[in-house]
Length: 461
Image 1 (tube, rainbow, N blue to C red):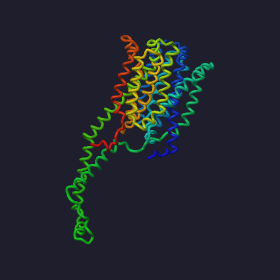
Image 2 (tube, rainbow, N blue to C red):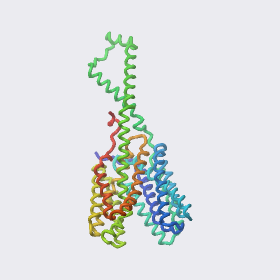
Image 3 (cartoon, rainbow, N blue to C red):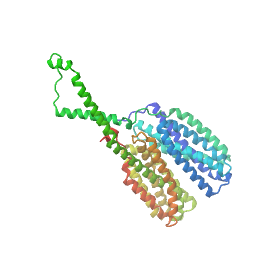
């Protein structure tokens, strides 16, 4: 049956989330392209800048965890709006920093906004996707990549035109606040329906009573109801209290039994499964984003060392990866809708593994570029599927679960390049690419964890 056309408010919410993702990508790109100008203005060394970037990342991880709890309590619309406003205004801070201390403070504030916005906007994207009834998460992430591309081009154009960094950031922040003001009212309101966890005992109780009635019916044949003219009817209406008390007691006993069962082992087993699934999703997010971080930081240098490419050709390595990743995210939703999220993760990570293997084995620049391009296609759809799975676990702490998964993924994004750096002290850089290659194979093997979670009533024991 053909999918129904989404209602105008739902389409407006989708466009609003597109705008927020794009705005986040644009803000991050504006910061990245202006790092040289900021370091020149503040006089910080490369080593100090590295420590400050680590500080910013740490504040982002902290805010991710806080944003998950705040989203569960106040809803993703409120947290998305507040975090987007903070992130947009915070990009002004580094432009006005004059020394190490003020730059550190500015990057902490920006990290807090960036981390909170990543969690909140993905949580709201899950809410929009669930109401659409078809996969659209990858498109949101494609808009983030598109926003980052626009931000890098705008930042480059501003610097070429001779704009002061403070002017650039103020103009960008002003435009960003306008985008937020237009987008926030169109975001979906918080879901008011009861959470599955809160209704599980009642559902289990009803199911147990119904089952008991069916069981008793199978043991004792159902008799016809007494007719008004029969002696049985008069007897039953004359002394109803003799029958109602035992029935009420039996119903109360069955209800108590159902509550005891729902609060005991079945719920404990279900919560255990949910916890294990969160950890499994976090591990996959770590591996996927670790591989992405490795490509971002080491692909160009790997090409120079392995095939002797010049600087301009080596720079195409990350360009090939970024291009295919953006294109892959634009079509990943259709692939997921047709073949399912497990197929996207499994075949995508296998394709990425093949890309890394090609990079390790290739002696020619064109073939190496093809390997990096395959990595971009393979990695493009995995992270959105993981976030969708984490946001649809059906628990009362969906945003908190997502923040944990996203936090682990962000750690992988930061740790991947560091791990490769350590390994290069022992083995060649190209050989170190076997680490993300192996990680992709593990992700392919455990891709089934992104399968949609069954409804609580389907999982009841």
